[in-house]
Image (cartoon, rainbow over all chains, first blue to last red; front, side, top):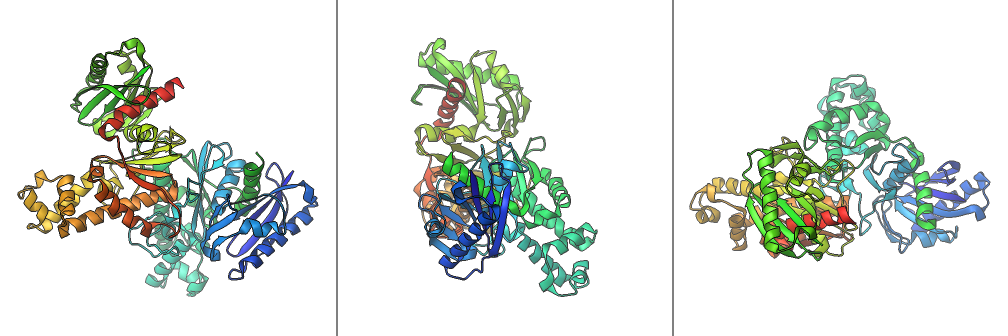
Amino acid sequence: MKYIGIDLGGSHIACGVVDEDGEILAKAETSTLVGRPFENIVYDMGRCALTAVEKSGVPMDEISTVGIGIPGIANNATGDVIFCTNLFWTDEPLRRELQKQINKPVWIENDATVAGFAENAIGISKGCKSSVFITLGTGVGTGIIIDGKPWVGFHGVASEIGHTTMVIDGEPCTCGKDGCLERYCSATALIRMGKEMCMAHPDCDVMQRIDGNLELLNAKIIIDSAKDGDSHSLMLFNRYTKYLALACNTIISFLDPEMIVLGGGVSHAGDFLLKSITEKLPHYLMFKTMPYATIKLATLGNEAGIIGSALLARDMLTK
Amino acid sequence: MKYIGIDLGGSHIACGVVDEDGEILAKAETSTLVGRPFENIVYDMGRCALTAVEKSGVPMDEISTVGIGIPGIANNATGDVIFCTNLFWTDEPLRRELQKQINKPVWIENDATVAGFAENAIGISKGCKSSVFITLGTGVGTGIIIDGKPWVGFHGVASEIGHTTMVIDGEPCTCGKDGCLERYCSATALIRMGKEMCMAHPDCDVMQRIDGNLELLNAKIIIDSAKDGDSHSLMLFNRYTKYLALACNTIISFLDPEMIVLGGGVSHAGDFLLKSITEKLPHYLMFKTMPYATIKLATLGNEAGIIGSALLARDMLTK
């Protein structure tokens, strides 16, 4: 059998047909265009998935299940999305609406959870007894995988480390609270810190790279400047990776997984990022000789969402 | 069969003989006298356990296993204590040494974990699919119980939320780091804040209750003053329970258990404590309508260590 995986993001919808090994046979993509009616977005999800099926040449009879990774929280008992802040969705009947186009069993899961599941199924943490995936993007998502299964909690709201408090009464968060971890560990946080640096040091290397136009600033520019050895950027990057080391220590102290996997945009900084975090981490551990999780970079990149949602739906609905 | 449970603390060693239902048939207690050679402390643990057995009238043939709750981390593959900061133990062969006196299978586990296990087995969280126990005492210990089993992590160092960072570069911790959660959520933390209050307001209610002698200050005096409505003490208590609400949110956001159980000395403040935390908690949740863990007070008190270590050893060694 084959499996549809849908990665629903704030800007794009990516769909794929995946085989038993997690191989993507065909893909299709479309814009999310947030702000449109719920039904229209779901219609485009279905159309995009059917396009991927058509491209793959797999007959619909051979498609077993549909998995959806969402930037939010779902209830698989009802098939409803409970909360999806970036899409402005609350209590939307996603499964029912999608099944109007594709009448297959549907499993809906948080996008970081499905990406973590994909890494644990066929990626860097394959074979790990337990792993925690953190995605460092617009926000910070987390996927906890224990014994090959996502840990979603008793009420389905687990693995949201991005909304634990990192700085009490700190930076305001999009969720309405202050000082959330994702205000310090996301790509967005790195950009905010970069803007502050540029305003404090208008002659800095980053400011030159963006021709003085703060609108052009992104995480890669700051990281490239730090990689090239600019002292301001390095100091900033080290402040950022201190927050990441603290986040890793929270995961280790609380859950002690076999592996922590870093994904999302910032993880493309590669070994430069990894080295900066792993150098700082021992300082934050409870005692110096304690054994702790290996920290690794994700390997499946953007395809983790499609692969993870497809394979998770298979596991949850057919096993 | 019957089971020995040993609760090894920084000041006392408490031992008991426990039946299948978690009922304590007989108890014995002795001082730990920290600073003595490892062998002497373990000898007294054995002697104390044998005294409890003698008191119970249970023949040694009917004793199946020995469980030990320690204020630290153990490796049950070797039977060694890896790290036990309050007792100054590192890599000590606790099982081997104890078996010189009591030649039965021995299971060693963190004290907060065994207390959480006891609450989950026969106490307030009995029947919960998942629970997190936090003990608010000299430090802050945590016990994560999932599907009736302690979650000790891949390397055996999990459930140490007390040493996640609550305030970056904050109060120095006994573990050598700064700003650990237990510096803000323990009884010790409440006393530290109380001392600061007394020094800032020498005419405050608490200062009167201790006749100006800061050495007499303890958590109960501060809580009693807050219960009686003193404005300084109430403000302090609310600051303390804000930290506890943040800690609960970390547990909820990360693990989302069915129940969070508060134990340890501070939990004797009862409903006054519970109300103060549960009033604040919704403010720290990711979204306002989300379902989340029930927060409850522990019910087994000081006996949780004996009961939990005895029943856990039984489960781990005989099932």
